[in-house]
Image 1 (cartoon, rainbow, N blue to C red):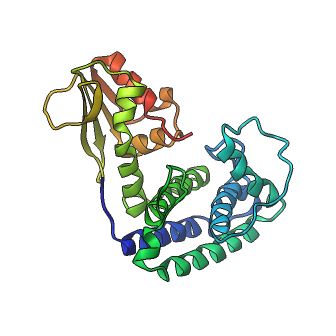
Image 2 (cartoon, rainbow, N blue to C red):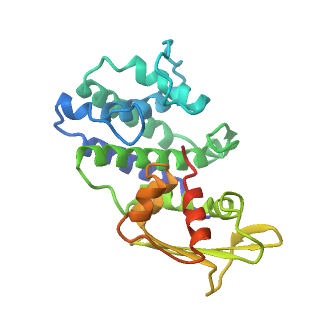
Length: 271
């Protein structure tokens, strides 16, 4: 797995948050209320979600609201996120953006003040008990994926090939063993290649040996999935259906087509 310095992680988080602010300059209320790829969430809701997480990390208590519409929520974390959305839904988009700018500036200052030992402290994160710096890596990924939700809804592309996308692709890469072994149930001795097209792409080969699926160098492949960098990350993030991924520009399956499709189906790790 890629290793980044503490400075790179915090600078990268600041870069992604600034890019979100850049993407939401001069929006009217109609634009703020446009739906995004997260069910039930508007452009403004995407920023509120990020606000809620950072406020929680500052020690602010979660708002006390009743969740009435829960059909789009899939797990307890989703319910935890939703209370912030409901609480701030009456605010204008400009008010939401102002709070996002405020809390992210505060958080960057807080993170820059932490010592190496403080960033070493292990605690809760969405991926389990990890050092604080690793949690911040996850914050980079989450923020960048939500930035792309915002940009796609607004028709304002950007934020590509920077640290946020690098981290997001790296996180997708770490999931490929589970995707191929557990998700696609690839048989013993088989191998699946993900050939990702783009500046941050490359060839990822996963082989099943002794009942375990892991990255292994090699030229052969039982199944190959060629796909764009954008499709790779959006499918990993659960933002693109299997059918849409199959017909996306750059997608091509070769070799064992059934295994390739099963692996692409299982790539939707984040929900």
